[in-house]
Image 1 (cartoon, rainbow, N blue to C red):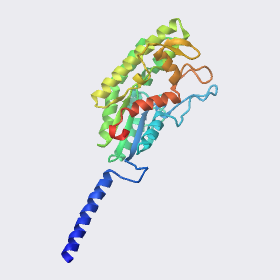
Image 2: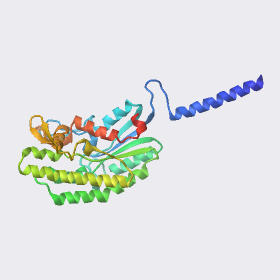
Image 3: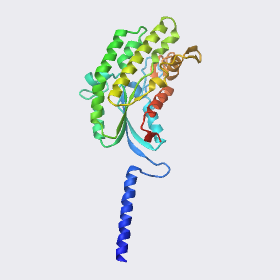
Length: 299
C-alpha cells in the first residue's frame, strides 16, 4: 500500500510539473486568455504619436490617442496578446538627429535613441514589438514648399543611407532575443499638390519620385538589417495612378485620392493643409504593421 501511494504521488508530481511548464508557455485564463504579454516600443517622429491638427488658428497639431500604435495594441488585445505601449517619438525627428545631434524633446546627453536602448536593455528578457518610423522628416522640408528642391532631397536621402543602419544596429544590440522589429515606409501626402493643377501637377510628380526613392532606400536598409517592413506605401496605393472619382473634386489618380482620404493635406483652413494622417490613415498604417507581425500573434 505504502509503495503504491508513493508511486501515485510521484505520478501526480510529474503531471503537475508538466502542466505547470505548459502553462508558463501557454497561460490560460478562460475565455479572455492572454496568450502573450510584453511591450510595444514605438520609435519615430510626430506620426508615431498620432499627431493631428487642432483646427485652432495658429496652433500646431497635437498628440492624440488614435495613433497607429494604439490601433495595433487594440488589434492584438482582441487576439489575446497584451502589449504595454511605450511611445518615445519626437515631432520633427530625423534619422540624422536620432544618431548625431539629438532633438528638442530630450535634454542632451539623453535623446530618443538612448532612451530606446535603455528601455530595451531594461526589458531584455521580455517579449516585445518595436516599430521604427524614421526617414520622412529627412526629406519633408524639401517637399512641403511650393517648389520641390532636388538638391535638398538628395541630401536627405544621403543622410538616411548614412545614419539608419547605425541606428538599427544600436537598437538590435540593446534588444533581447524575443523582440520583433518592424520598419515603416511611407505614402506621399504631398500628392495633394495635384489638386492645384498647372505647375503643381509637376510638383506632385516630383514629390512622388522623392518619396518612392526614400521608400526604396528604407526597404533596402531594413532588409539588410534583417528587419521586415510594413508596406504603408502599398496601403496608400503610392504608385497607383488609376483614374478615380474623389468626392467633391472629380477624377484624379488613385494615389492622389488616397493621399486626400488618409491625410489632412487636402483639407482647407483651419485644419489643413497638414501632412499628418487622419484617423483613417492611422488605421491603414496599423493594418500594414499588423500584416507584418509574427503569424502566432495574429491568431
